[in-house]
Image (tube, rainbow, N blue to C red; front, side, top):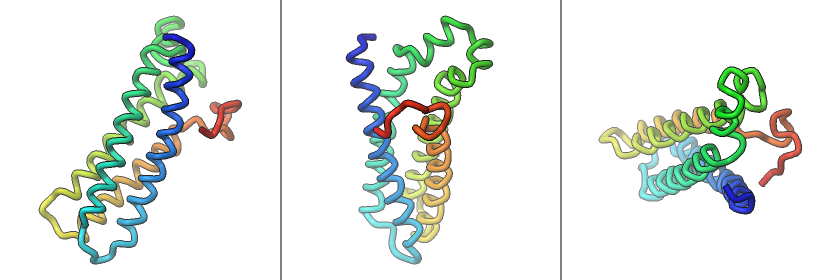
Length: 156
């Protein structure tokens, strides 16, 4: 992959992370404070925007994983055994990707709970549970600059 294209996609992936986190916090706040409020069109739109941006981030992330130096090529060059022994390689080649895919699946399940023919209170409770679990997995799977694995990286 062209280094300029890789850098652009990496920055775009990082910027979209903040959009996803913001939408996720908004969706969690809406469900948390809903009480007996109806599950509104706005709640559904927030879930749709959240999953849409998460899917876009996933597509960009998969392109980075397949064509960039820290994913598939790393496993291909050093072998799976060596990649699993190296914490940096294991994080980017396996843990980050797996965690994010699981989180995005949970986001989709949470969004689908808002479409079920159940009470509005149950819709808010179910979306809250799936969104909170997804948020936890996302926060654990991001290579934050304050973590050893993300040392030297940027906030964006």
